[in-house]
Image (cartoon, rainbow, N blue to C red; front, side, top):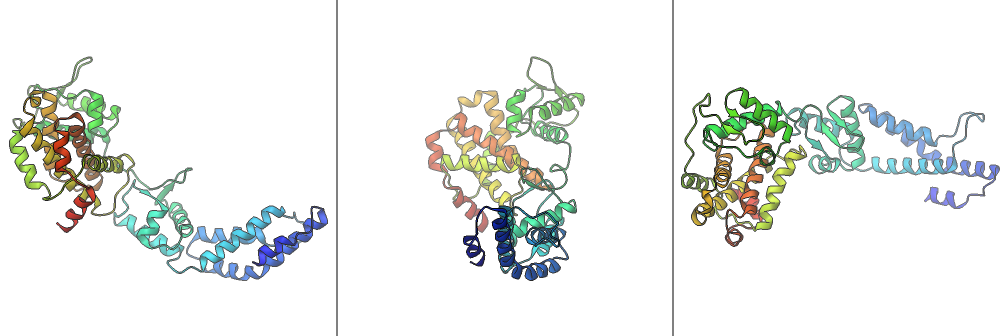
Length: 384
């Protein structure tokens, strides 16, 4: 109120009037400076917070000598308002900047925020109980100084380090090798073309192409220009016969969550969520990935079961059978210990489940009657 009253008493646009107006602002701000200096002295553990207070105090303080440059009046008023807002924010209860930095630092070290994951200020406010985004921003600046996070010019915050623990083409090649060993793509069987294969693996086309050539060098695949990639007639490891779809359906139904139903729209939303986590390299809160994976396994079980019961004439198509087998094998495979690998596996399963639904491998009407709101599924998986 004092600052507002001072602004209403400005005298005019002459040099003398503007100087008088500066004095009015300085007098209004002067009583706040001791408290600002106290806040500066309390910020010993946060270099970013110290710099923050120093800059705000310097911007509103009267020059110590008449010969020094006088601040622009508009900028002086803005600086006074910033200081006032900062002082008001500092009065709010809750963890301080250094405490917030300690908690985020601990979460990074214990893997709650893994390397490569995105960190939003609003997420930290919600999970750590920080009172304001301003304190979180200062804490993140301190962590950036330590090299624990990176902040892009667009203000995207990411935990430092590679989001992926291993080379992507090698990772993709290992998963394709597992699918071949499991009988999804038997010897002399063909793989999808590179673009649809990359889409199903939620990976870039160059990475998938490199993975295919790695497997070709290992005598696992036959890769040739102008023709589809084929599994080598004699791969250098044992290969299971293509699993029977009825057997896979029975195993999937044993893994499915009972009572879970999703509409077709909600099913696609769940699939999109799984893909989004991987594409944006966002690590979900603990437990959320397991919940969503359980819903996807259940959806895959329902869709595959319907396909096997009602669509036998369509299952004569090689690609349709491979899609159903790959969906089942992805759902039933042992969950990896690496959390990023888990997120990628869930994203792949989400793409496969959506493909079954959208390609019409199963009846749309049947799907709507079997699947329900994903929030019900997630709530059920928590109780389970």
